[in-house]
Image 1 (cartoon, protein in one colour):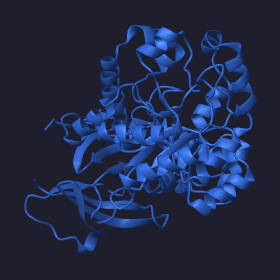
Image 2 (image 1 turned 120 degrees about the vertical axis):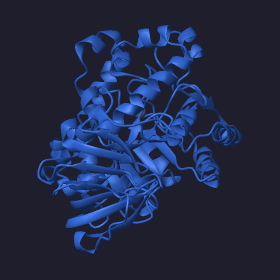
Image 3 (image 1 turned 135 degrees about the vertical axis):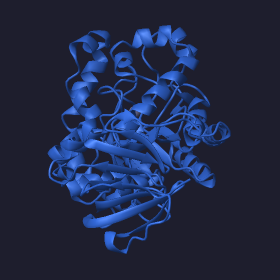
Length: 424
Ligand SMILES: [Zn+2]
């Protein structure tokens, strides 16, 4: 394979939060093999050279909280989703949805809960082998949920047809659950330490789930296999339990207290604010409101207003913030750039800080920063070429026409939102 040379560009140094002008980046096979000033680049025969004329190079963007097997249309009509689709259908939906991310410059996604048992680990392998274009995928597959709490809504026969979670009790049950996911090829573990908003009438957002010994067993067993644990958590007691017991990423963190913020700093925990989903829950569209039981709407109204002010304390005290949308809860897949805009607007993040969140900070959160998150030699060649204007206006990333090129693992995947890929 000839080398790919991205020359005459500005380069975003995500580790230092700076921009270096007049850079050239060289890709060989799947890796970045050279980076330096234009003037010191040595051309080789057969090099495939892109003269970028001052465009900006970003590390591939990341979205750490999505659910690939649903569309926004499914969220708006959950009965149809559950009644009309068999498990395999979710696999095809997941493939299609994963592919959309590439066009937006998102080259790594973390699926935080899926229906099929080994569906997404297979999808990950298919994408890694470049049988289809698509991003790097980390799969949790079925979340581990506490017995008797995380019911979805709908009658029993829906739930038994395709459960969104499996439930376990006790340390032995948890250890088995983690090993079972490992066997099915999961990359990490997703759990819930509180109830959820859309999870059902009896699933209270301030209900704390799992005992300390169960959470400790989950984290310990996951780490043995090189997996981290992500916890959905709204209420502060459940948030605090997750952090205290060594969970790596807190998802939502809606009602987080200052005490829990301090504990996050001590434990090195990451927050994935999912503000797109929070905003959606705050103003649920009428069509969906009609479908939901009044108790669920009441829950949504109660918590959504507090999310931004509580999360702001975490950001201001220095908790590392990673990017996650919870798509498709708040809209069609690939509104990752919109989430970045919300963090700038609501938290006062600078454009540089939010670009760091979407790259190196997210890579650290999932413990992949040795190969992802910055444009350094030896790392995977996940590169986005875009307009420099993004440094002044983060919304530039929301228009695919501004995403000039997307490379994943050293392969050109898309050009201005159009796919440029031949399967291997
Ligand atoms: Zn979620």
